[in-house]
Length: 80
Image (cartoon, rainbow, N blue to C red):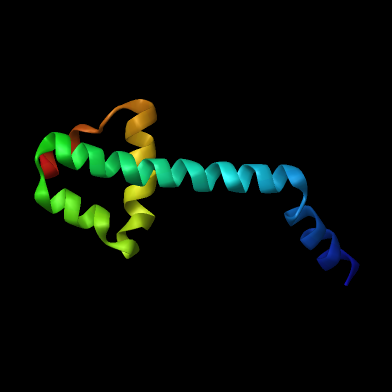
């Protein structure tokens, strides 16, 4: 029981909360960047995918990756 309470205590540590909030913000910005890319590429399908909540699991990380490291060529090839 002591190990479980240690784990729960560590999960709610301020540093853990900082990382979690940072990840949530990055994923939300990634989703918005995905929509912006859809508009820039003129891809209606990409925009529709970005508007579907279940797809945010994929579009958020891909949008964040694209913002930080550039848009992957396969993404442009698929939707461009």
